[in-house]
Amino acid sequence: GAVVSQHPSWVICKSGTSVKIECRSLDFQATTMFWYRQFPKQSLMLMATSNEGSKATYEQGVEKDKFLINHASLTLSTLTVTSAHPEDSSFYICSATPHNEQFFGPGTRLTVL
Amino acid sequence: AQRVTQPEKLLSVFKGAPVELKCNYSYSGSPELFWYVQYSRQRLQLLLRHISRESIKGFTADLNKGETSFHLKKPFAQEEDSAMYYCAPPVIKSGGSNYKLTFGKGTLLTVNP
Image (cartoon, rainbow over all chains, first blue to last red; front, side, top):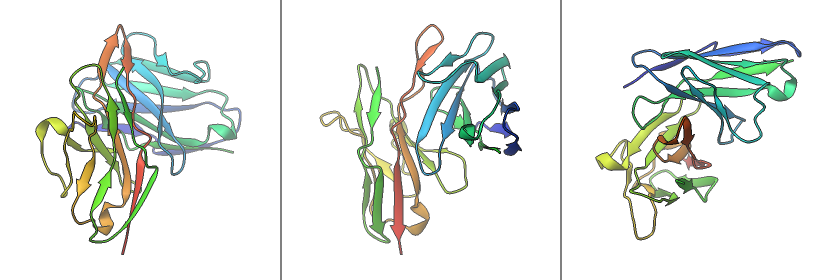
């Protein structure tokens, strides 16, 4: 099956700093990737749809200036959490879709001190 | 718009008991549905898709158009089945670069010894 990787797998940062998370499709091209957020023991929350070569589409309530998404190539999307605060601490998951099912990355655990 | 609903947030059964995780859908076209599973400390992965009518790890799911349901069933639950289960529609472009993607809220299955 298709493989999606994320880097880093975990990151700890100070409040006010920015953190970049990468999502890569390793063996297929993905014009579209999705970014999710997951709190402990809760469901996935779709944050945004990342489109290669164009602007990301954000879900209602997600601040686009806070969560910057760049999809510069067919195999890479990045999510940058800008001026991170403790409430941004969460598990961030990306997925990519070569057809109509999703393949998920392993997730990135972000802890903001 | 495609929408799926998982009415149960938590489900607890004993080992060896039958288990059914509910999923209902509202669709404007021919439904194509998936079940994803997230085991503890692992990434989300596809469990099964209705179109292939396969059985994975003893789980099956039948599309019931009359009841608009796609419930996930297993006759004898095992402890290793404990996980979060998500019902989801396929990834389909609704127009332009926008996707309509509505995961179910997920059901946390606990299989007790």
